[in-house]
Structures are given as structure tokens and as C-alpha cells.
Amino acid sequence: MRSVVIDRCFVDEAGTRWVIDYKTSRHEGGSLESFLEQEMQRYQGQLAGYVALGRALGPQPVRAALYFPLLGAFRELS
Image (cartoon, rainbow, N blue to C red; front, side, top):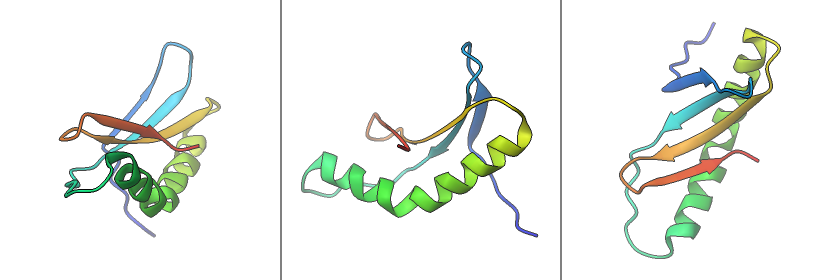
């Protein structure tokens, strides 16, 4: 058995369940877009696991994303 902590999970007005993972990663030079893409690749498996957990909670469609509050950035898993 594995424990998981989900930072934010909610169902929006359209009936979609969102699973949001907050990241406090620091961007230290280079392209911000490249950095965010690398972070998405790094955490893709983790987000996919969250989507699977969300699907187990009910029939709603599930979407997952990373939120970078220090960078003001939001990236959805595609």
C-alpha cells in the first residue's frame, strides 16, 4: 500500500475533477518555457497516477496539472 498526498482536488462547474500538484521549483536561468516543459516531463508519471486515483473516486472526467505559485505558471497534463 502506498500513501499519496494530493495538494488540491476539486470538481469544477462542468463536472470535471481536477487534481492540482503545487510545485515550488526554482527557475534559475534559461528559458522559462523550457524549464516548465522539463518539470512536466519530470512529473508526468506522478500526475498520471493522480489521474488514475481521481478516476477511482467517481465517474467524472479527470484532468491534472502542475501549478508553480512562485512563477505564476500553470501547466496541464496532456
